[in-house]
Structures are given as structure tokens and as C-alpha cells.
Image (cartoon, rainbow, N blue to C red; front, top):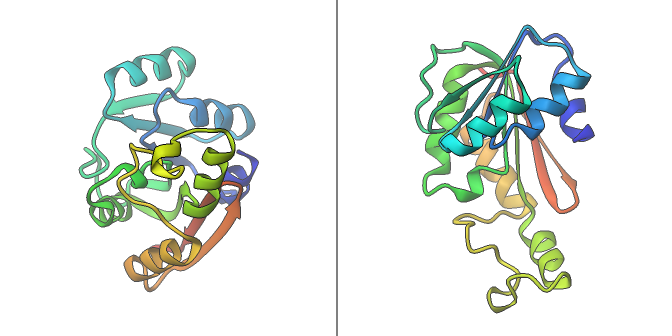
Length: 174
């Protein structure tokens, strides 16, 4: 979580957490950083109910990462953590994140090799060689970086490993 905090630019007034689930990331960031407006989005009504109870000063809306009910460039920074590996159309979600985000995106996915090894070591998903059955996409550092550089050719794209995740920072969105 500290890596995510480090990647959020200092002077942001609005942050959106796309696919926020129960609001764990929202809660952590709200305790450490003060922003004018924090918005969480998710499709799960149950997850949003939990997020609202845990984060009473944060706005949450039911929304798909393919279509946010927001104006263009309406948030300074967007987070999309552990989401795109579950999507049939990750490029479409990246387009929508870019549409609503002014400055920076922070996106994380499991590192295919490290995540599978961690699962095998903990005896999870052995019949699938450690691959999570809910993951439609899987990424190595190179394939993740390639996807993001292709989608954001005019932006600064940096990908780092934080076992067993890949965390990308995309700055200077156009």
C-alpha cells in the first residue's frame, strides 16, 4: 500500500478508486492523505455497502470500469488496482480511465510468474498451475508495460514490481 501512496502525486484534489471493492484502499489513503474528494466505484452493491460503512466521508457509486457516470477529465488521479486482469476488454477500461482522469493513473495487476509461484507455494490452484480461475488476463512485466505504452504513447509510463504485483504509474495524461 505504501508503494501506491508514493505514486499518487502530492497536489491532487480528487482521486477515484475504480473497482474499489470494500473500500480498503480508500480507507488507507484517507487516513494518510487528505484530498478534497475521494470517489470509489464498483459494480458490487454488497462491496459498496461495506465500503460506505467503513468510509463514511467518501462517495461511492455503482459503476462499471467500462462506463463511469463522470465528465471528461473530472478527477485528478485514478487508481485501478487488481481489476484489469478480471476484464474481457482491458483496453476499453483503460480508455474510460483516461477519459475521466486529468493527470495520473495507477494500475496494478498480478505478475503472472510471481503470482503463480506464490499460489503454488501456498498450494492454491494447483490444477491450474497457480493461475487464478477468476483472472481472464495475465501479465508479465513486459506485456503489461507494452499494453500501457501502446494505450498511452504520449504519457510517462513506469512499471515496477512489488511482489507479487506489477504496479504502473502513468503520468501526464493528454
